[in-house]
Every structure is written in C-alpha cells, then in structure tokens.
Length: 404
Image (cartoon, rainbow, N blue to C red; front, top):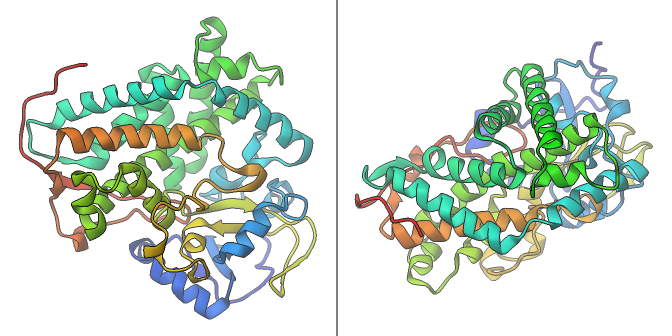
C-alpha cells in the first residue's frame, strides 16, 4: 500500500537525522520560535506527524483520551508496512496502543502485575548486579559505561524481574535495540515476538514469582497474543529507556558543574540527579502518540483526523513557560513517564533500578570521570529516544568487589 500524500504539505522538520540527535534542544527552541506549540515534523522519511512542544498543550492532550486516543489502526492503513518505525508506533493489542475498554483491560493487567514487584528487594537485586558489573571492569581503569555497566545492569535487573533466562533475554534485548534504531524493523519485530512467545510457554510450564507469571495468572485472562504484546511494553520500557536514563544521568553527574562535586560530596542526591535528567534529557524524548478520530482544534490550530500527534517530553519539560531550569531542582512534575491514562506504570521500578545502580557507582568508583571531551560525545539518531552511542569513562583501577 502506498503512503497517502502528506495531508498538510509544509516544510516538516526531520527528526531522524544525526544533526537532530546532536543537539535536539536547539531544534526544540527553533521549532517553538518558528511554529509555536504544534510543529510539523517527519518521524521517518515520508511519515508526517505533529510534535507538541508546549507543556500545557501536552498535558491537555495526555488527559483527553477521547479526542486523542492511542489506537493507530485507521492511520496505519495509509502507511506501508515496511515503514522502519512501524514496530514502535503501529497497532498492538496492549495498553500502549489501545483505547476505551480494551485499554482499561490491558492497563489493569499491567499495573496489577507491576505492583507486585517488591521494590526493596528489587533495589537490593539491582545493587548486587551493579556490584558484579563494576567488578568485571574495575581492574581495567577504563570502560564504556553505557555498554559495560548501564546496559548489563538493566538487562539483568529487568530479565530477573520478568523471570527471563539469559539466552531468551538476550534475544529479546537485541530485537528491542534493533526496533528502537529502526534497523530491519519487521525482522526485529518477528524475532522479538518469537522470543516472547517462548518465554510465555516457559512460564506456563514453570510459573514463578515474576512479572510474566503474574500476567499469565491475571483475571483479565489475556490470550497468548495479548500476553506477548503486554511484554513488548514491559521489556520495551525496561531495556532501552532505562539503560539510557542511567547513562544520561551519569553523563550529567560527570559534566554538569552543579553535580560533579555535589553528588559525590553528598549535598545532592542521586535521585536529584535522576530527576534533573528526566527533566532535561528524558530517555524517551518524543513519544506518547495519539491519533485524533476527528479534526481537533487546539491552540488555535486544526489537527487533522487520523494523523499522528507526538508529545515531545524533552521539549515540554524545557518549556520556558515552566520557569528557569535552575529553579526546579527536586521538582518531579516532568512528563518523562507521560501523564494521564497512559502514564507509565513502571516508573517506580525504573527509578529504583537506576538509583541503586548509580549509587553503587559513586560508592565504589568515587573518582570516575569522563575519558573524552564533551564535544566527542555522540548521540544515536532516531525520532524517539535520547540515547548515547557510548560513554567512555576512566577511574583508578582496583580489585573486584567482595559480594555482600
């Protein structure tokens, strides 16, 4: 099927380029000055959308699921199935991509299962995993913090919480990463669903105290397909965004003068650094898609029916209408985990893992520092995430840490 011509043929800003990834905040400032709260963008070549860059407008949309439902099926009929970002934004029978009664049913299964995760135990598990990751790299005195610490810690923490054995978890993680990058998206999605179905079969045969088993036993009585699709959101929100949250926050601690000494010295907490990162550079920078079923007037502009509306959490969090950035330390009123009926139900789990991991780094590698200049830091392109390509660090070599 051929894509329908752009319903609003204007000069759209491309959000998939390396140039955008290098300095998105400059782009958001330009967008706001040029277009106001609603910006014509391209998410991928030939895929138009409207990007919301005003905080008040975003909050209004996120709390109005009737006019801004998340179900993309009508829009999707006009877009080639080979679209590289389709696995990220296309229809799935899960809470993220459904509306109405279906959304309520899926949402209940998700929130109930996630609420059963014991957070204190999770913090201890994440701390143990972080110590093991540090022990693997501490003798070297240098590492890629993203690939050798943040990624493995998140991978093992989420996999353990979901009861996924390492081989299956590795396949799920690789497929998720490819989907976020838009690389062989259809193939990656097929590989992901195959691995998730294997995990579901395993948990049917060997249930345990984990998220997958709790979803299987939920009173919503999810079908096999529905179970797999709920796990897309669980692993999708877990692996990539959480890895990026940890790495991005560590970069802030290493480079921002407000945090470089204060966090390690104890006057500012890791949680405050995390909150600042969630405000300034949320790992999911642009997402929370909706598809108005009818033309909608908002901020004196008309949004056409069945065309994607994307919330820029990064731009909205940095909206000048919210005040100066230096005045919001400790403020958690950001949109990094969305808001309204589609707010992320795993926010507490993400914060617990990230905080435990970063605190372990400060405790055991107190002299950690950036191993390159800030202008050598590169960011992975893509319309949705704020993701480092790598984070080279150095520190005093030491012996592996004792287990405790």
